[in-house]
Image 1 (cartoon, one colour):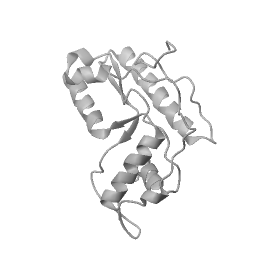
Image 2: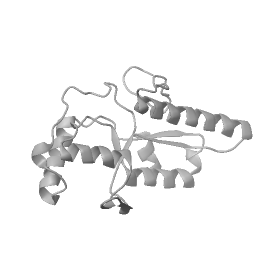
Image 3: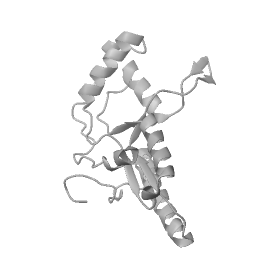
Image 4: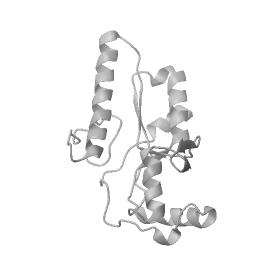
Length: 175
């Protein structure tokens, strides 16, 4: 870590298994799984590329039958946005990426020899403020009726980490 921003050369060394914090466990498991995959690829002399997305958002692909009708998804990102638009929890600042950009990065990496042996962080490079996200959600709720714009609040104290990403490398795959 260079102290200014995270890059594709940095690894998550802070998350740990903690039964009281599933988020930390999830982040730890992603990093540890990737380390194991790189070790196996090296051991078996297999080509490998890692696509490391931040918090993934995007349009749902289908309605899923559920109790009381249909719901959009069980994904954490959709669940979290649902909590935000209902006012169940305050909006927090996030690094994020659109699922369609993650898909483009996967396709590009799978078709370009220069991507072999590389890690790509697929994300916005700076956190979007919780206030900006809340204002956008308020507009969406007003236009679509998705939630209650008046119920949306934001956590102005949550920064979620002060160090930005150097995430532009993945965009070079698409050039």
